[in-house]
Image 1 (cartoon, rainbow, N blue to C red):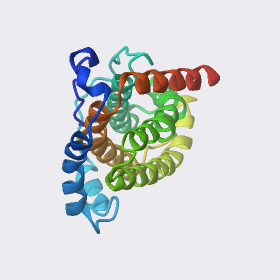
Image 2 (tube, one colour):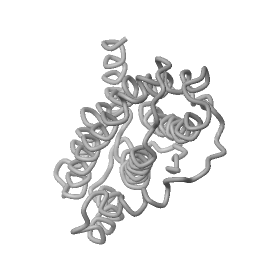
Image 3 (cartoon, rainbow, N blue to C red):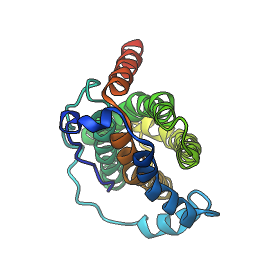
Length: 239
């Protein structure tokens, strides 16, 4: 499960309003070190092995899911982090559903779970991806103006690529979930479920380990306010 960062209120860090060049270098240093170790690795290169290890696993997670953190666009970084919590809960529901339909078919629990998963990954997840691509990374690059932003640019390229891959994996699962939500008996392929879960977990781990700490250090209050405004508009336009 991805690690969710606990963000310190900005009022406790007045020096963050103006980040110095040295501070910028300190922020991206861990990212650069990790990037050098990762150089040459292909995204999801070891995914088949990890999927194979997951197929057939038994799951003891709550079904069809748990409540999610209630965070709004007034706290954009916390909202992005809370979205990861929600994604994880939907992934757990998906794993449990795959086992459930084998034993019980598309009963009421299965229909409700499939509907919840569909709602999240067709409505909320695309908004989360857009928040990162259209607001978070542009803000990080702007904050690094005049400095070496290579590390952030590399992360941006990777995150965008992974979003497209996750969307492709979801497109393969969605028809089966649509059928289950309508009460039609369909098996959820274990390999497709495991691949989707593993891919999302790996993706969120990168964001939690590298992207979010940089955002907390680099983005000032006015930038966060602007991000929150854009995120709010995005949700209003799709309501």
